[in-house]
Amino acid sequence: MLDAVDHYLAMGGYAAFVWPAYAVALGVLGGHAWRSWRRYRASTAALEELQREPRPRR
Amino acid sequence: MISRLANPARFMRWSAAVLPWCGWLALAVLAVGFYLALLVAPPDYQQGDSVRIMYVHVPAAWMALAVYLFVAVASAVALVWRHPLAEIAAAAAAPIGAAFTFVCLATGSLWGRPMWGAWWVWDARLTSVLVLFFLYLGYIALVHAFDEPGRGARAGSVLALVSVVNLPIIKFSVDWWNTLHQPASVMRLGGPRIDPSMLVPLLVMAVGFLLLFLTLLLLGMRTALNERKALALRFNRMPAPGRVATRETPLPAQSPIP
Image (tube, rainbow over all chains, first blue to last red):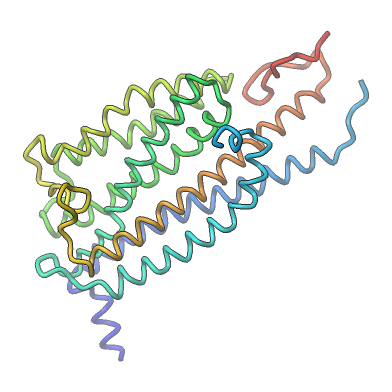
């Protein structure tokens, strides 16, 4: 069982290239998605905060 | 239809409904794609398991080109019709395109080392994609280089339109010049030259990347609209003498100052 996992992870000798490639893809795209989501939540919260404040009198 | 959906208030309504569906669908398709690419697809008879890098590299390359085309078309709409959502769409798409281009370059390099014996070669395909990456960075820098957001968006639009000439150069570089990079094997006249056992995972990953792009685009556009609305609200609440038109406090079309 463990041998099969080891064999799979070795990627036929290309583990040092295959896994970093997938890590870069997940890291860059996932990181961008995470940052976009955080920024979106922050912008929504800031806008709601502003809209809750009473309008100043002119 | 498009002009109806492109009204900012209406956009905020329909995008709020579409965004969660698009996001979850993107995650589901990408999960299937990674499963097919890493576990189901067979090793190549020459490249062995290193061929699995292609399932990330090729869709990322397609998206790098497609997103730049999107930025250019949105820029044209913004320049000709002065549509505010087109500007916002172009500016929101560019960082996503830059991310795809970076993934394309990095994974290509990781495949090139074992297969070509070099991390990088200055061949026409690789160099023109590197230029595309710098164009993305230049566009993003230019859009944010002005105090007045409208001027930055217009300057960026002109850059995007002029530099779209790089896209056919990238696409046909493998035909026009002798490159180490192989010519097209999927998007070619006469149909794909890849076995279905490898073509299916490739296409599933491509659909997943496309859905991811749409999700991040809607998210970025909604963020930009939220931020613009918040700036306008803050501006309107400032005491009149302190009003300064900068990126933080944009001057509205009709100044409320008597």
